[in-house]
Length: 280
Ligand SMILES: C[S@@+](CC[C@H](N)C(=O)[O-])C[C@H]1O[C@@H](n2cnc3c(N)ncnc32)[C@H](O)[C@@H]1O
Image (cartoon, protein in one colour):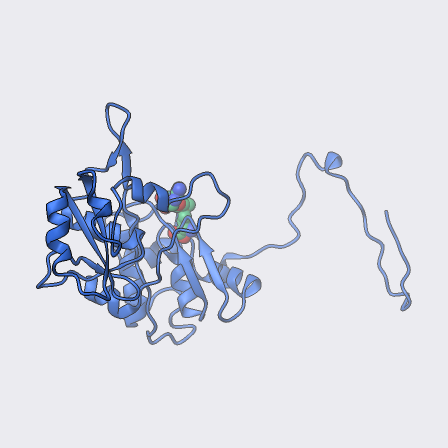
């Protein structure tokens, strides 16, 4: 038992218990009852509307998440749920005016979460806490998919570009990794993306020759620079002109990536909504 006396003299005695004394567990100090925060049946009803055949096994009711977010966050805070499941956290966070990040690796990212979030934004989903908060829709969200690893190891132990990456995916990935905006020029085949200060990027799976570089150089304006990323290149390509830099893939990618660090600083730009719309 510990008692200390403060100036007001209104302290109450507190029982101090050590972990070694409470190995049989502790009696819960709070109880959240189903009439206030819902239960599993309620959660299943809420999520059933998105996929009646495949009802998610362990959903939480929106009322429960509402209480947690009310206690643990305020307007504009960022809520992270890295095991998103059926998307209850992001749906509730959206309706409560929080920002949020949800991560999910299962198929239900498409079958439940994406559908649910779209319906929340459109205002067509009136389940969960929608009626209680008079939810009418609004706002938006971005839905990203992680691509497979860019580099994989082949049967000889070499680092190679993963087979997932066909030509167009390879160009897009290289633009992103080298910090260029994917924007193929209709007239100049060697311009796949735009960088800063009149710089462009050209990604090719062909063997790059000195003659090819010279041919491109004849079209390059005096104030332009070009980064060429070929899979292989002939010696001498990198010395044709100071405005042209040659970086072999995947070596250039490996250099742009950081391994074994606590913070990864890959230079990936935040895309604007216009850029996302354009790409999609
Ligand atoms: C118990 S469920 C979450 C339920 C969720 N709170 C709801 O109300 O719908 C856990 C989820 O975490 C996902 N998961 C497990 N490991 C993961 C990982 N490494 N990355 C992303 N999601 C993961 C599972 O696919 C599963 O959907």
